[in-house]
Amino acid sequence: MSIDRLHATIEQLTDRLTDVEQTAHENTELRERVEELERENDRLREQLAEQERQIEATDAKTDAIAKKSQLNKDRITEIQSRELEKGAHLKREHVDTRSIDVHTDRLEKLTKEDGNQYFRLPNGEDPLDRGGQIRLSHSDLLPVQQLARLDDDMLRSATSSRPARLAVKLWRARADDTVGDNPWKSGSQTIREFVKASDLKHWIRRQDPGVSDSYAKKLVSRTIDALLDLTQNRIALRRKKERKNGLSYTERRVILPTDAAIPGEFGRDTPETAGVHG
Image (cartoon, rainbow, N blue to C red; front, side, top):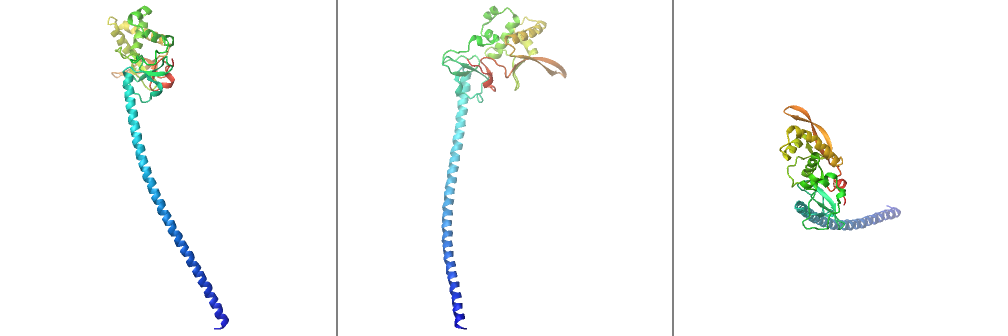
C-alpha cells in the first residue's frame, strides 16, 4: 500500500470516527430529551389525575347542592300551597305558579294599596291583612261577579229575574268552594270548566225542590242566557255528542274557556294572559 493511499484511508476513518462521535453525542442529547419529556409527561398525568379528582369532587358537591336546592324548592312550594289554601296572600315574585299545587287549580292575582301584586285563592281573605286593601275595584268586575258578592237577600233585591239569580248562584258555586253543590267539572286543555245542561237541570231542582222537571228544563235555557249576559259572553255554549245506553244524543254544555279573561282569576296554566292587575 502506498503512502498516499494510507493517508487517504486514515482520513476516511477519521471522518467516520467523527461522524460516529457526533451521532453518539446527538443520541445522548436525544436520550436526555426523552427522559425530560417522560418526566414532564408523568407530571402532566399526575396533574390531570388531580384535576379529575377535583372535578369528581365538584360534581358530587354540585349534585348534592342541586338535590338540596330541589328539596328546598319542593318544601317551599308545599308550604306556599298549604298557606295559600289557608287564605294567605303571597307576593307575586315569590311564587312559581308552574309548581304551586292547590285544590282549586286556580289562583287570583291582585294588586293592593302597597303597590305590590299578590297571589291568593279566588276570593280568599288574607288573615294577616298584609299590604292593605285590594285595589281591584267593584267596577272592574263582571256583572256576575258583582252580584255574586251579595248575599241571597241582597241578590233578591238587586234582581227580580229568577234565571239571573240562578246564574249568579251557579257562578258562585264555581268560584267559591265554600258554597258546595258545584255542578261544574274540570275541562280539557282549552276548556277550564264546563257544566252539562242535564246536570244544570238537576242542580236547579236541588236549589228549589218545588220546581217541576218540565219547568226546570225551561229554566236551564233561561239561566244559560242570563249567564251569557252577566259574564259579558266570557262563557260559551257548545253542543257535544254523547252516548248513553248505546244511544247517541247531543248534549248542551256551558263552557268557560281557558283563555277567558275573568277579572281577578286565571287558570294555573295561563298566569300571564288571564291575570288581572288592580
